Amino acid sequence: AFVCPLFSCGRLFKRMEHLKRHLRTHTMEKPYQCHLCQKHFSRSDNLNQH
Image (cartoon, rainbow, N blue to C red):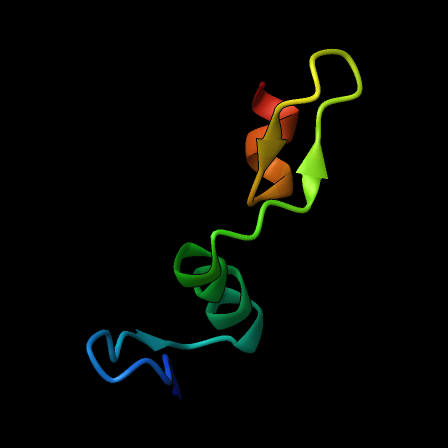
């Protein structure tokens, strides 16, 4: 299992990519941007739904 390194969190994930996705909740990173309205998202699937 992969553990979130933030001491106050400690969430467990079966896959490394899920941990990496989760870490964005702590860093507020939003690398995916809508080319129409410029809104940013932390996950590509949320951008696609938008």
